[in-house]
Image (cartoon, rainbow, N blue to C red; front, side, top):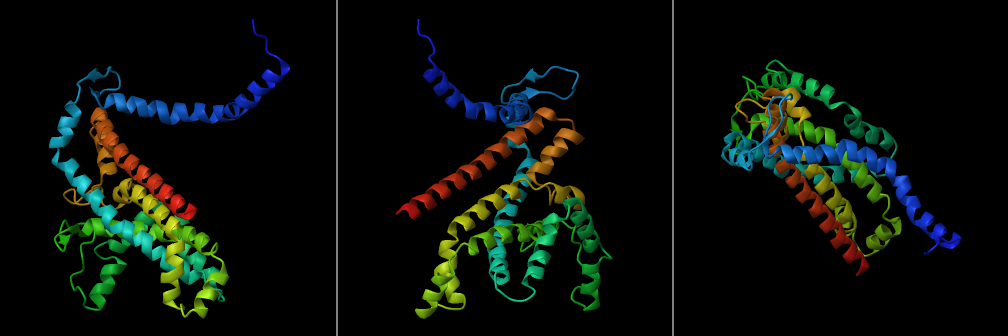
Amino acid sequence: MNQLTPKKWLIIQHKLTPYLFLLPALVLLGLTVFWPALQAFYLSFTTYQDIGEAPKLVGFENFLRLWKDAVFWKTLENTFLYLVCVVPILVIAPLILAILVNQKLRGMNWFRTAYYTPVVISMIVAGIAWKWLYAENGLLNQILKTFSIFPEGIPWLTSPAKILGILPISLASVMAVTIWKGLGYYMVIYLAGLQSIPADIYEAAAIDGSDGIRKHLDITIPLMQPYLALVAVISAISATKVFEEVYIMTGGGPLNSSKTIVYYLYEQAFSNLEFSYACTIGLVLFLIILGLSVLRLFINQQDSNNLNI
């Protein structure tokens, strides 16, 4: 019979130590994330409306219902519009801001603080404030009426009408708040990347005639590709999970024109008490976010391979 020698016991301790440090976090994640996720996955194959009743297995009935649900497809369309409209702006605009505030000029720290301030403001506060701005007699409509741009004002949050026949006005109004809140956050990410670029690279480029806007096209954007990819994926994942803005400002209306997939999930679970159906919607949302996360890992791997080359 093999006996543990002091040397073998030391090796075992060395191997177990990292897992012992991870154990509290794994237990916490298991109780608050993994176990609820498994329960939600199970409930998506059941019917479960009353907390006092046991779930009943119904197979793929919830998924068939989801396939035929016109409101679900509308929320999926709105979420896709969020991705297409918001993500490009949150990738490009913060980079421009980061380049501007990266200049060594007097008072630039004040501008950095001003741009970042919306990030630290609660979304509830921001949503209420913007809802007042969008009101029929709010500041925005008052400005439009004063300068006779739109004498009757614009129903920012109450009209299902579409811009260019594609983007609902109410959804575009909510998007503006998301962009306003996110600009400063992504600007800081870009700012960290810009400050990691050595100044002598720009000096060498200036000697070769690459200056002004040209230096950013030749140097900044190529070197900032990992940060661009990171911001693109993070903003895309955030866009698929938009909830607070919609809940506070429009409630998903009018006529579902601003309802996103997360808000629909909330509505089914807590308004209609359709817990199983809400779990099915959540599973679809999980697959979408998983796809975006895999895309992020793939992009990061490609960037690492390019750097190694």
